[in-house]
Length: 388
Image (cartoon, rainbow, N blue to C red; front, side, top):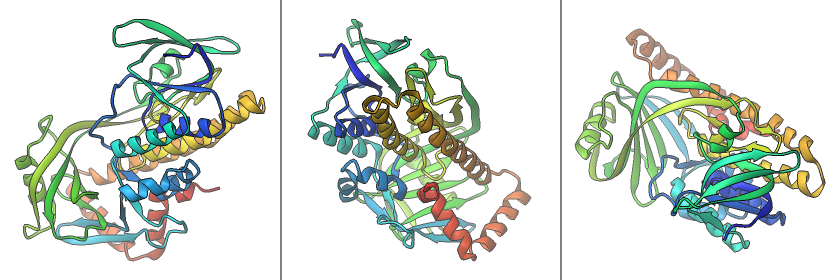
């Protein structure tokens, strides 16, 4: 049953919304979290949780469970034409979590939702936000259930954590500026024979396009590749052909089982503001970018951790607009930086010109020998360069 009014209404129960709900529950803030999906999706694109994110999630009481379920990866390696260009280790990062944790978004959501329930919270599933109205002291969201019966919830603040196509952002008429990349990508989760170290993320530059192979828990791997004209759900044969052309030489990769596959396009967009009146945006509702570096879910999770603090300040300490302005002032520049960085990484990885590809590979091989470059690379990927 839906409450009539709360202090905070969260629209969207992905990782960002769930983390925010946990943070608010820990502070005793009256909140509700609604989600149109009846169940957590069994498949997902996000699979990396970085060190800076784990540091924040530790305060929510979930980091240890995530680590127990995930696979700690200690190294990133970049290759081209059978040559290793860069090998960068996470093991010397100045953190309790000196690795990239590989765990699917679906598993992450299961752990977050269980933690929320342990605090007495509950995701209200099967409700789709259809409209939002703002007044001076509250906002009201109209929700439709699966039978299209409408109801509404009033809240002092409404948080849009409802993804790239956010109804909350659109209803608040907050511009979402940016564009789309021409490249199409495919991904697949597979079981396969793989002779390179399992504790490595491997990136391969090839004339046909970039490919990334990420190890996952349970003896599985995630393959992501730029690919024009691929089918909506690439077959095992299609994925094997890509591995053969772009992966390690000598037939070192052989797919045994295709678990699932998909085809997608990527975007880069940023909300003009993260806070407007009684509306606040977080996660993909506020920013979307290339998956290069695995930053998307991480950015939203850290948004949520900070936003829980600022909403508590706004409600309990009557910090109001200034607390939420601080959230925007701190998180929007980080999102801008991530969008710019992942854009450069994407364009670098998808160069079509042979002379430019050659120049990129030579440059990376040279830079890969420099310790300060390798450290800067892993500090950026881990998110630890965001520390104040």
